[in-house]
Image 1 (cartoon, rainbow, N blue to C red):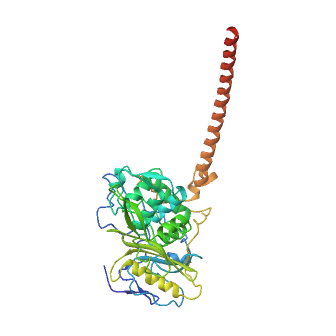
Image 2: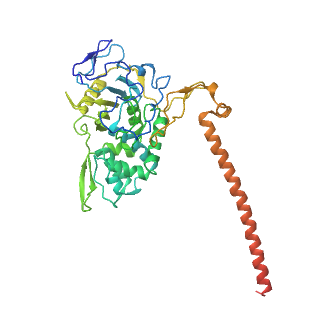
Image 3: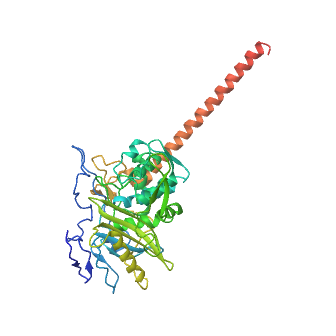
Length: 421
C-alpha cells in the first residue's frame, strides 16, 4: 500500500493508501486477499447490490474522492481509511467525507446493526442458553459456556464492548436462527436507507457478498444510538461477565480506546479482518454538538484507526457554521414510480442476502400484476388475500365444530333421557 499522500483536484491531501482510480469500489469491495470469500464449486457469489440512480444523502455523496464544503480547512494528514464520513448526529449533516458510498467490508462494525435488531426485538431480561455451535465460532470470543444461561443484556454488552463472535451467534439464534437474524439485519438496513449494506454473517466476518459503506455505517450508528439499551451498552467501560469455567465472573472491558481518553466520547465499535482491514465507527459530544465518524479499510500506521477517528472528530468540533456536503438520511428514500428494479439472481445467494443482480428491467417490462400492485404491493396484497381466505376457512370450520358440538350434546341428552337420568 502507498504511504505518500495524494493531492486531490481541489487541493487537499487525500488519505494515504487511498484508492488511486475513481469509483473503483462503486459496486463491490476490493478483491479478497484470503480464502474467506470462496464459494462452493458450481455456485456463484451473490451479485453486487444495485447502485441507486440518485445518491442517498445528496448528489455530492456520489463523489469518490474528498468531499468538502467550500473554503474547508486542511484535513488531518494521518488518515489512511479508503472511505470515511464525518457527520453531525443531531442534524444528520455530513460535514466531510472521502468516497462515502464506496463499498467496503465492515468487519465487526456490522455488530452495530445486529445489536440494533436485538434492541428492537428482545427484552433485556430475556435469556439465551449457549450452545457448542456458539462456542465454535471463529474468534474474537468472550468465552461462553456450553449450556449456561445468559440474559440478553449481558450478551448485548459483551457484543458491543468486546466484539464477541460467540455472543453474536448466540443472539442470532435467539432472533430465530442465523438466517432469520441476517434477514432482519438486511431488512433494517434497507429501512434505514443503508442501501450499500448487505450482511451475510451476524458478526461481520467476511463472506461472499458482504458489503457496506462509510455512509451506511454512520447512518446505522446514528439510528442505533436512539435506542437507550444500545447507547448504554456501547458506553459502558466494563462489566462482570460469567466466567467460562462456570465459577465466578471475569471482567469484560470495553475495547473502544476513545472511552476514558477522548473528551465527550459516547461509544464506538472497532473491527478488523484480513480483507476488511481496520474499521471504526463512534461518536462524541461537546457543548451539545454530537458527531459521528465512520472509517473503513484503514491501516494502523502511521497511527491507529482510533487515533484517526479522534483527529476527524477534532476537525469536526473545530468547524464553524453549518456548511455541509450531504445528509445522513432518516429512512429509505421514497421510490419513484418509474425506476428500475434488480432482477432475481439466477444463483442462490448466501443466507439472508437480498438478490442484487445489477441487470434491471423498466416498468414497461413488468407483468400486469406488478404494474397494478407494484413490487412491494403485490406480495403484501397476496399475503392479505391469503389471510382473508384463511380467516374464512377458520370461520367455516368454527361453525361446523359448533354444530357438531350441539349435535353431540343433543344426542347425549337423549341417551340420558332414555336412561331416566
